[in-house]
Amino acid sequence: MLDENDWALLRVLQAEPHLSVHELADRINLSHTPCWRRLKRLESKGVIRGRAVLLDAAALNLPITVFAEVKLKQHDEETLGKLEDAVEGRPEIVECFSMSGDRDYIFRIVMQSVEQYEQFLKKTLLHLPGVASINSSFALKCVKLTTSLPI
Image 1 (cartoon, rainbow, N blue to C red):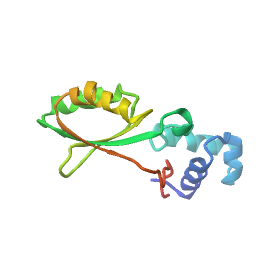
Image 2 (spheres, rainbow, N blue to C red):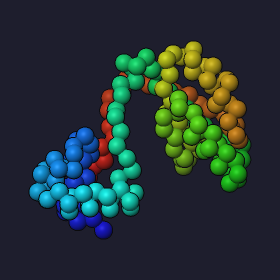
Image 3 (tube, one colour):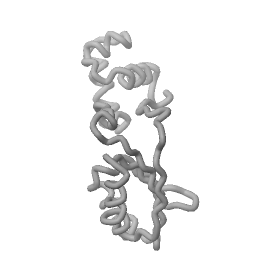
């Protein structure tokens, strides 16, 4: 169970992940040591999974975002595990969700060009374990992209 100090710590840390423990403690009105203990407890329990630097994909010549909806041939545990392991090894796939509904997975993929995606689709995605079909959609514009949770 999280108390109000935990929630405050998470809200501040989510907005400003670069803060030191001392600065974080000041923001939530705790002394350094109790703040540090809370932070370590939240990390050990997996509430805080890590901290990240957000990069602008377009500024790094990755302006194409593709959402690939994947349908599998079979749904046995071995196939699912092999597919998920393969996806972990592909840096172009920046997000992967197992889905309910008509499609089994959805990938968010970043690329330099549509042509590069076409090659990735033909040479990699269609050869992932168990893949029956892929339906690709290209993002026209990013309206909102955040890692902040509504806490």
